[in-house]
Every structure is written in structure tokens, then in C-alpha cells.
Image (cartoon, rainbow, N blue to C red):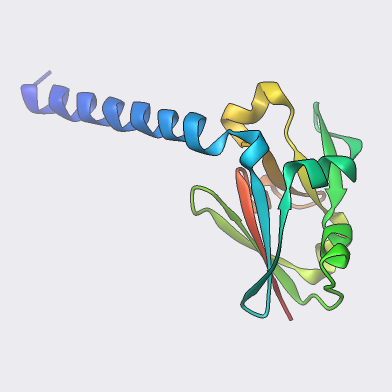
Length: 145
């Protein structure tokens, strides 16, 4: 293997290590984690992990048991009733838009402690849609419509 290839591999490993550190130190402080809720381009609420946990119920998705809050309940608590679509954003910038038709199948999941390094404290789950619509490290929900 050439020196150039070895330097490239070492650089990628360093970037991965830094990213893992940032996620573990900055994003996994569950007590500080919040979910920002936006409507019509303005923030209407920031919900804490404790607020969500108090309203959650156990739900098994695949082989994992999450504590979940229906997104419809979260939005109702924020005074939002009309939803054409929801844009969910993760701390890593991953974004998915979900049609309002799936609102009753969409949940804010509180990730079990042992899975938080891979999924974050919060995850958006849409039952019945491909996992490409699920958002790990959920930090923001924006309602359109």
C-alpha cells in the first residue's frame, strides 16, 4: 500500500474518532437533549427529554422496545392542529419530510440507554414506512401546512 493511501486511511480514522467523540460528549447528554418544534417557520416549543418520557408508553418496533410518544400528541401539546407535512431533522443534518397522512403512524421514540451511541436519545419512527424515513438523533420537527 502506498504512503498516500496510508495517510488517507489515517486521516479518515482521525475524522471518525473526532466525530464519535463529539457525538458522545455533545449530543448524548440526555438531560440536556431537547426537541425543537417549529410551525410556520417559528419555534413554538422546545420539549425536554423528561417532558417526553412523562408522556411515553412502551412500544416494540422490530426487536427493540422504545418508549414512544405519538407525534400527533406532541403537536397537539404545542397547539398545532393542521399538518400537511412534517420535516424531521437529526443532529447530523439528516432530514426527512413525512406526509401528514402518516401522522398517526409517526412517533417520537426515546432510545434505550444501550442504543444511544448509535441512535441518539430521540428518534423519529414512522411505522409502515421504510427506515429511510426514520431520523436518528432527532433534534427538530417542523410542521408545514
